[in-house]
Every structure is written in structure tokens, then in C-alpha cells.
Amino acid sequence: MRMSDSLTLAYRAALYQVQLPGQWLELQVDVPSAVLRQWLAQHGHRSAALLTAHNPGSQLSDASFNEAAQRELQAAIRSRGLAFHIGHNLDPKAEWPAEESVLVPDMTLDDAQRLALQFGQRAFLWCDASGTPRLHHSAMRNSSSSSPSMPTRT
Image 1 (cartoon, rainbow, N blue to C red):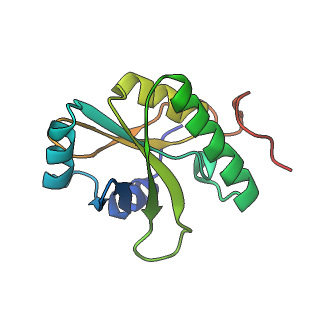
Image 2 (image 1 turned 90 degrees about the vertical axis):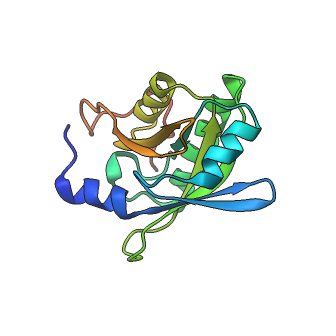
């Protein structure tokens, strides 16, 4: 399912904040981040993905569902032997609630795509060692189908 232009614009306008050790990082789509580039280089990372499990299919979900989905996403990342740093995706107009996210160093673009799809996300950010986050659309087949790993809505 193709994302609407307004939804794409919302992703592009969002602020993506990440808590790195000793500093906060603020990212925007297609805006080079010297701080991220330097951090990746200092730690020998070649890439990073920014993912969330909140509000699958860009549909508002209640807090308990989002928290459970986020815990499952974090467990899936840990099971791949990867670390992550906690962040938040923020709507600068405050029309959409903040979403918890994770920055995952050394996650490949393909793995990020698979996790985004697994957790029902329409898009995610990924960057190479340049430190410029790019918006990647997930190839969601049907927003009404839920992944077997997703928590069930109550």
C-alpha cells in the first residue's frame, strides 16, 4: 500500500531524537548530521536504522498496545545480537503523539525493512556512514493484515 503524500510529508517534517551516551541527537530526514556521522565513525559503525513499533499502519493505537509492541521490537533487535539507543519521534505541530523509537547501529537496510514490515510500519529511517538519515517506505501489502508477532489489540 502506497503512503499518501501528506503522510510522507509528516514523516519528513518529524523530529527524531535519540539518547546517545552523554548526548542527545536530533535527526531530520535528508538532513546530514555531523554528530551522527562522527558517532558512527568513532564506534566503528557503518550504518544505523531508526525504528518504532508504535501505531502500526500509521493508525493511532492505545498506549498499552504501543508499549507492548515496542518491547517486542526491542526483543527482536536483541535476538539479532544488536544493541540500540532509545529515542522519540516527534511531530513538530504536536498533532500526533510522540512515539518511542530505537536507533540500531549496524543494522542493514534489508534487516530494517524486514523489522519495519514485521511490526506494521509504513516507513523507517536508515543511514549509511555519512550520517544522513533517509526515509525508506516499507512495502506493506495490506494494512489490515497483522503480523503474527504483533501484540493483539484488546
